Length: 110
Length: 117
Image (cartoon, rainbow over the protein chains, first blue to last red):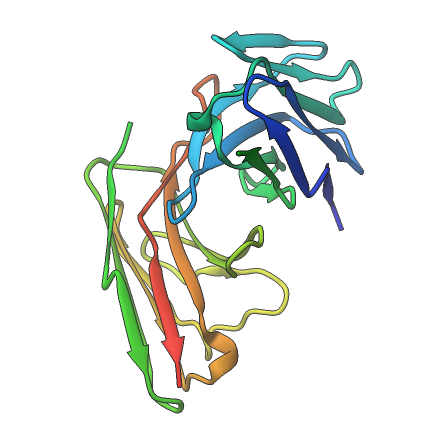
């Protein structure tokens, strides 16, 4: 079945360093969404990418959607403690269901 | 946007019993979904709740174990039946619009943390 692979599983960074998580789908996606889940919280929508090659920015966050609409990335510049959490990508299939990546947990080293 | 509430927020249940989780959306949504999430893991879709008809279940989930109702566009219930310790998890309800040019984001409830003894 359709799968979305996400790496890495964890990333430890010093505050101020950059963070990147990558997603790769086995099939072409109609769109890809990114969510953030804080510890003990529920997933919260960050952004949706629809167009091939699309790049969107939200302050220190940069989201990219690959030309083939099979891969995506989220890059955070100069991480802050408020960025801590797990970042999930989710690809939408033809039934409007989301196929979730495994998530990347961002951990800020003290 | 939509605000989703769930109750109960948590429960501890004995094996063999059933628990019904309620999900209420403050505005009409096209789609409603039920997920299960183990701590530190990704979300697993249980089913899509369909208004006025039987839910659509994902592989590995069946109606007898997880009956779902959705009597209108803003309310749904999930029952976890004949529970065993393996059913201990966080159950999340989500809702969203679908199709066309709208942003198809899903809004999530706070989750129900279920522990089965």
